[in-house]
Length: 226
Ligand code: ADP
Ligand code: MG
Image (cartoon, rainbow, N blue to C red):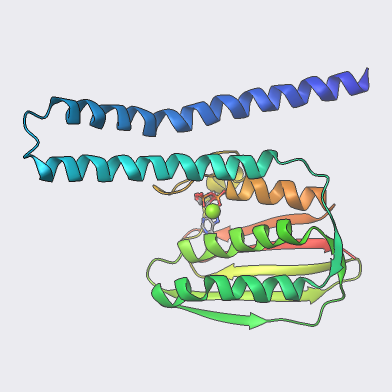
């Protein structure tokens, strides 16, 4: 009986996700259809400017759909994965390399306060995805430059990582919405990054906490059990 309830709750969640997904995909589709109709109406093949412009927009919209579907699949991936015992430091160093260029481009200073952490059992690719999502969000929150601080600490029962930015921050209401699938305040956002991340952290029996102040910055803390 218990199992049935859980099963039907899961189905309800899947249904909601599917509805939200359909909604997200419909916008770019509608836009592509509109531009295809415009293309169809062009009188001569001489209107190269229009053709170029319409097809450029259509490619952008297809890119957007691809991004939504990619993040969505990541979220629904089965969770029977290989876990290995490694240090979170290794993952952090890898991700720092990935975001370095973007930080320079955005005029963001990157500080690291890393302590040597004991290795813990984790799904490396998934945790790397989480750390990347958090750093990506931090960078995107700082349009006029700022400081990204990455801190680690060994606690009694956990290894802890903090991603701290001096960006736009969030209101209490925005914090409440965090993690809802497709919730995004960005024009280019999919709103799946934190949904995926909190699912991954939960699967590791860890914790994800958010502290944020509008106009001041945000600190996201994750903890993985030792
Ligand atoms: P996306 O980045 O695609 O918008 P996320 O799930 O990663 O989706 O984040 C959802 C929303 O949470 C963002 O659109 C933004 O409003 C808010 N957010 C997340 N991280 C931060 C941050 N470091 N600073 C300010 N806002 C943030
Ligand atoms: Mg994001």
